[in-house]
Structures are given as structure tokens and as C-alpha cells.
Length: 390
Ligand code: AMP
Ligand code: MG
Image (tube, rainbow, N blue to C red):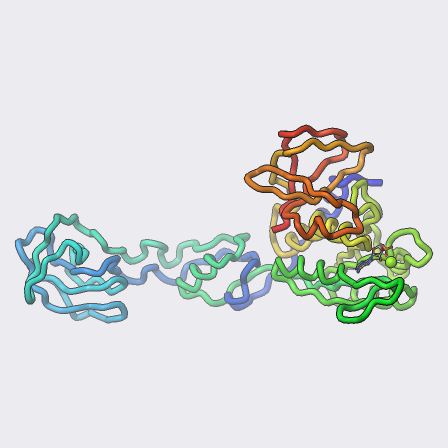
């Protein structure tokens, strides 16, 4: 059975970034830019006033004659200031020809059409020069940049409304199990509510990715056909349940029959030992265990970085965040343990109710604390890796 590190390496190796597409920038949140973006304009596009006040023809006159007004949006191309002259101006307005500085109104005394400065001013003060932020033709954002709300604002601000990004995967989730009932229905003895597909879909949506859901009973043909169809129409397929060794676990057999190439089955970890990973042509397939905490844990450890890599993230498989334990932890054996925990101010509190069948602690957790296979005991204050859930 392979280790967690080996499992991640194999998935990382088998995962390719998807093709580049052009989209509306407004749809770009959380996507990764796939080509360098060059600024098509100077920003600001003109010398711009940074203050409400007065544009001055010089900074040394005793008083200035106010000869006009320019507000944001005005086009004052015919206005020119000479020495001893001023123009009333507002933030964002075009600085007129001949202006040496802008005096903010707080340092100006005005009587009729004449003003005096009540404090000294230096040249260019309160003028945002044309191209101060970025110059036409300059690199605005590098290929590989994540699109955030600020990125969207910055790019719209320089007149860009279309961007090339890496595609998001098309994802299907197949929930297997004859005991599973959809929400809203009444449970009869032996039944439980289907919850894995909803948790997985929600986790996928945090990446701005859509997922479709299919539910199947524990029937070999139905399971096989659902998997076959999902593999044909998606970049990524997640199955939940049916991957263990029970008489009604049909998923593994179905994978074989539809021609899935197995990369591994089972990992030295708790929860989530019976994790399957494979490929059919270009489509990636995870067979997630059915136990809800196992399925979700495997999602965060393996599926999340896979989706991110498909979307152009380059470091999604590197666990880099660490924090310190507030209690000791010990366990036997060589399996990696992923424990539901709360991390705050870099301190980890392990939660109760760690069973793979339970989601109660997962629902209260903001991280998974990772206890790798090589070690058996940890002390308070030890630094370990965490996978953030938020
Ligand atoms: P399995 O791997 O199919 O044997 O399922 C393991 C456990 O997880 C069983 O107790 C199932 O009832 C439960 N389970 C499987 N799939 C789901 C699901 N989609 N939602 C909630 N519980 C599930
Ligand atoms: Mg089952």
C-alpha cells in the first residue's frame, strides 16, 4: 500500500493543466491567467488631480486669479494656466496645461476670484502623473496570476474586459448506495440521507467550479453505465462509496470494465484508506470512500489540489502551512492521520468525534491536522502541517 506522499506524487504526475480559453473578465474570479497581460493604455490616462483644490500656474505668487473650473469628467484641452493664475479643480479631473501643482483647498483662502495660499507647496504636489500606475505596453499581469476581486478591478481599470485563463474542469460526482435517500424524503429503516455529493459539490464550488451529481443504487450495470457516461463527458469524475470489499461494492469492478487505468488503490491513511485513483484517456477519476468524513478528507488532501492544478495553479500539491499543537497526540502504526481541528493564531486544537462515519467535527473544523506515517507521538508545541478548509 502506498503512502500519502507517494499518492500525491502519482496524482500530481498524472494531472495536466487544462487548455487555455478566452472569457469575460467578469467571469474570471478564482481562475488563473494563461497569457501575460499588457496594458493597452496609460493609467491614469492623463495628468490627474489627486485633491479638491486649485491648480496653480506657479507656486511663488502672492495671490492667484481664479480663471475657471475643471471637474472630474471635463475635457479642458483649451485651458492653459499662466503665472499668477489658478483654476478651481476637483479630484479625478484633468490637470490643465501650465499647472505646476494642485493646492488642496484646506490651504487656500479665497476672496471672490482671488486666492492666497496659507501654506507652502512644492512643484507637482497633488498631481498624479499620466502613466503613474502603468504605462501603455507595460506588463500588467503575468501569466499564472490568480484572478482576485482586486485583479478584476485593476484590469477593468485599464480597459481590459476579456482574459485568457486556464479552463475549469467539468466535474461529475456519482454517489453510490442503495441506502441513500434524497433530502426531503422520509427515512424508512435502513435508509440514510445522501450527503456526500452535496458536501463534495460545495467544496468544488469554493473553487468556482461547477459539478453535476448522479445518484445510483448498488446495482452493477447501473453503476458501470453511470461511470462510463460520466467518464466520456467530464474532465474529472468522483465516485462516492462502493469502492471497498463488500459484496455490493461494485465501483472497482466497474472501473475495470469501462477501461479505467488504475494508478493506485488504497493509501496508508486514516481516514480514507480505500481511495482509488485512475485515468480513462484524459479524464481523471477518484473513487472516494463512502464514509462521509473519509470522502471529504480525501477531497481536501487529493482532489482539491488536482482541480487547482488543472486550473493552472503550480504549487497546489505542496503542503506549506504549519501550526503548533496545543495537546499531545499519539498513535500506533504507520498510517498518516488527518484529524479534524481548529487552527487559530497558529495554534491547533484537535476536535473530538474523529470517526470517518461522522461529519459533526468536520462541520466545526477549519483545518485538517496532518500526522505523517513516520512518527508515533507528538507533544504540545510540536509543529505540524495543516490543510486549511477555509
Ligand atoms: P461504502 O463505502 O459504500 O461501503 O459506504 C461506507 C459508509 O458510508 C456506509 O455507512 C454508507 O451508508 C455511507 N455512505 C456512502 N455513501 C454516502 C453518501 N453519499 N452520503 C452519506 N453517507 C454515505
Ligand atoms: Mg455503499
